[in-house]
Length: 77
Image (cartoon, rainbow, N blue to C red; front, side, top):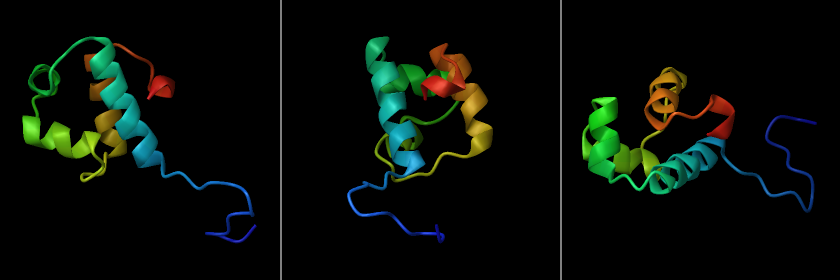
């Protein structure tokens, strides 16, 4: 397959969108506010909100801190 080609009937999903949705879901599972998770990450609430809505891309280097804060393996995100 050529780069960027999506066969008919297959929905292309951006990895960043999946991770953003899963971060939001894990935070909700823990019943944490954005402020609580942002504090654990030493991020601002605005940064976390941007990540959760896909307005800010996550870096691979962000994943270990997120996983530790949420106490989940990277595969869960």
